[in-house]
Length: 70
View (tube, rainbow, N blue to C red):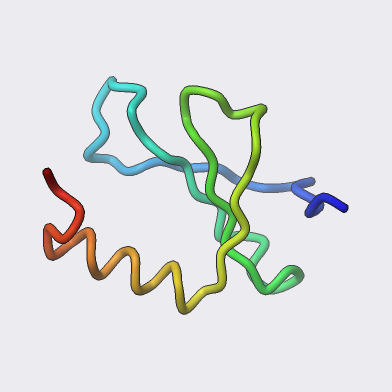
C-alpha cells in the first residue's frame, strides 16, 4: 500500500543550482502522515522514500557537517 502523496509540495535545495542530481523533499504532509517524503529529482514519478522526522533531521545534520561528501 502506497503513501498518499496528494497535495505534496516538493522542493529541492537552493544549492542544487540547475543540476538534476538532487533529491526533493516534501515536509508539508508531516502532520497527517507523520513522515517526510523524499524522491529523486531526475525521476519524480519513481519510488518515494518515507522517512521519520528524526531520521530526516539526522540526515540533514550529517549532510551539513559534510559527512556524506566523497
